[in-house]
Amino acid sequence: MITETLKETFKKNDHSLNGYSFEDIGDDHLFTGLETPMRADAFKLSDEEKKEKIALLFEEIMHVMGLDLTDDSLKGTPKRVAKMYIDEIFSGLNPQNKPKVALFDNKYQYNQMLVEKNISFYSNCEHHFVPIIGKAHIAYISSGKVIGLSKLNRIVQYYAKRPQVQERLTNQIAEELKNILDTEDVAVIIDAKHLCVSSRGIQDDTSATVTAYYSGAFNQAQKIAELQNYLNN
Ligand SMILES: [Zn+2]
Image 1 (cartoon, rainbow, N blue to C red):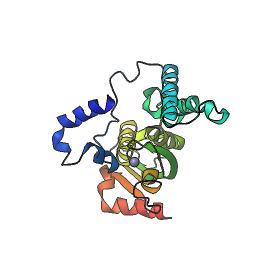
Image 2 (spheres, protein in one colour; image 1 turned 180 degrees about the horizontal axis):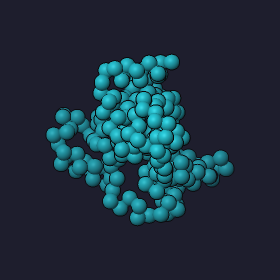
Image 3 (cartoon, rainbow, N blue to C red; image 1 turned 90 degrees about the vertical axis):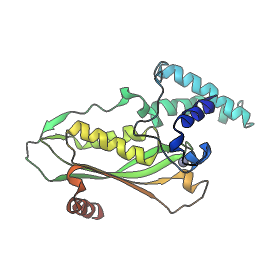
Image 4 (cartoon, helix red, strand yellow; image 1 turned 90 degrees about the horizontal axis):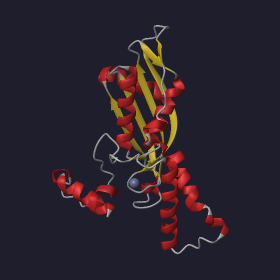
């Protein structure tokens, strides 16, 4: 049923398929846009209702795989998974969980780039629902306003806690920073390992994926070199 709806969506955008099959799209980690694809009625159910529903559906998956749900070790798993999905690893789907960000005047008149590097995050690949583990590096040049450093981490965590593709995660963080800080001078670099590449599929344990978003002043080679210099030290 769900698959049919998605297939119709892809049929409508046939030009974007480029000869790929529906399954290839996922396994090659192609993505369809900046916004996380959500339905208009995404928040009709409350978090509690969603958890109840997911627990039942996950119990069904375990049952179909032949697991004995009366076993004491497995009994609590469906509810545990449902709670983890809604309250933790996919909590960034709900705009209510978006971090509240207060801006401050740039009193110190600091007008060079600020770099917050090595922000650890855990996300999940939207094609396989297995972890993406990585580090984000963020840089911006103040246009007169600054935000608390921990808020940069919180923005990364918010967008990471969604089913994701790394390119979209990078762009969503960058767009959010541009909006909040009211500047184009933003850079985001993400270096991550995808468990769907290492633990399954091609089973490459050493490769990592790097994505970058540079805008405004960060389009200049000199600024990129300066940023790279900070990241290398
Ligand atoms: Zn994947």
